[in-house]
Image 1: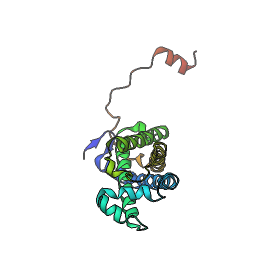
Image 2: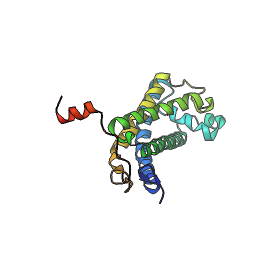
Image 3: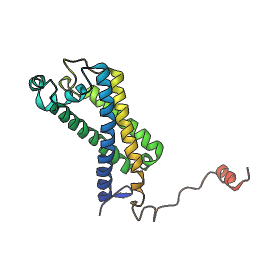
Image 4: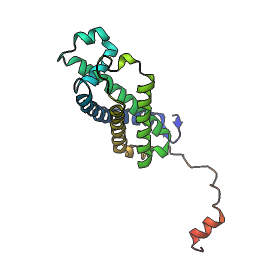
Amino acid sequence: MAFFGSLTVKTIWKLVLTQGLLAGSLASIFSAAMMAMAGRRESAGASAPLKAASRWLEGQEAFERRRGADPSPTALGFLIHHGAATLWAAAHAALASQTPALRSVPGVLLGAAATGGAAYAADVLLTPPRFTLVGERPLSGDARMAVYAALAFGLAVGALALRGDYAGHEHPDRGKNLPAPPAAPRIVRHVRAGRI
C-alpha cells in the first residue's frame, strides 16, 4: 500500500471525500444564503445570483425566456454552486491531508480563508462574463466578498468538525528509524533544566 506523507492513499481519499461532502455542503449553504441576502438587497431578487449560474448550461436566450417565477433555473444554479463549493472543499481537504499544520485550528481557519480567497480570485479573474449577472444589476464587490467569506466560514466549520478524522490514520512506521533530532542549543537546555 502506498503512503503519502503520514497517511495512506485510501485514507486520504476517504478523508477528502468525506470532508469535501460535509464542508462543501456547509460552504454551499452558507454562501448561497449570503448570495440570496445580497441578491435581495442589490439585484433583481434573492434568487437572481443563483439563477445567473444556470446560464452556464442553458445559454442566454433560454435564460431570458424562463426569467419569470420558474424555479428550475434557481435549482440548477444551486446545483452548480453546490458542486463548485464541494470541489473547493475537496481541494482544501486534499491539501490538509498532506500538510499536518493545516489540521490545527489556526491551520484550518487559515486554510479555509485561503481557499475562499482562491475561489474569489478564480471567480473574479477567470469566470467569463456570461456566467455573471449580465443584463441585471450584478452583485457589488463587497457583496461578492461576503459570499466568499461565507464560503470560507462553511469550509472552516466542516473542516473543524472532521478534524479528528485524521487521528489514528497516521502511517504506522512514521518516525521509526529516523535520525535523532539535533540537540537543542545550550541556552534552551539550560532554560529547560531551570538553570536560567
